[in-house]
Length: 195
Image (cartoon, rainbow, N blue to C red; front, side):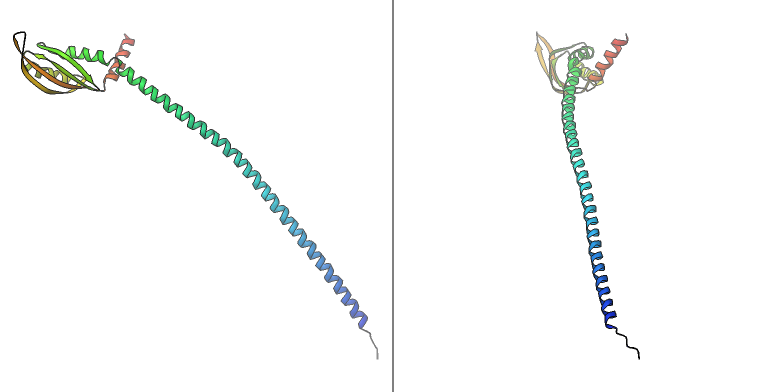
C-alpha cells in the first residue's frame, strides 16, 4: 500500500491560500484607495469648477447691479427732464393764450355790448359788462358757444342798471377756454412759416 503524506501538501495549500487572501486583501485595499482617491479628486474638481462659476456669477451680478443703478439714475434724470419739458411746453402753449383770447373776444362781442372786466381763473373766464338789450347778451352767448377757442358760456346774472342816464343791462357770465389753444398756436406758427 502506498502511503501519501498529505499534510505538507495541505500546509502548502493553506499557505498559498493565505498568501492569495493577503494579496487579494491588499489589492482590494489598494483598489478601494484608488477609487476613494479618484472620487475625492473628481468631487474636488467639480467643487473647484462650481466655485469658479459662482465667482464668475458674483462678478457678473456686481456688474449688473452697477448697470441697474446707472439705469435707475438715468430714468430719474429722464423723468426730471420730461417733467421740465412738460412745464416748458405748457408755458409755451399758454404763452399766447391771452392774445388769442382777446382777439377771439373782439371778434365775438356784438355791437351794443361793452365789457367792463375780463378775469381769468385757471381755464375759466368771468366776463362783466353792459348790454343795450338782453337780446345782445343772448347773441354774445351764442357767438361764444360757436367759437373754437371758447365753450360753455354760463349766464350768472343779468340786471337792469342806469349808466350815464341810460338804461342798460348789466351782465355777468363765465366761459371756458378749450384745450385747442395749443394746437391753434402750432397751426398759426406753421402758417406763418409757410407764408
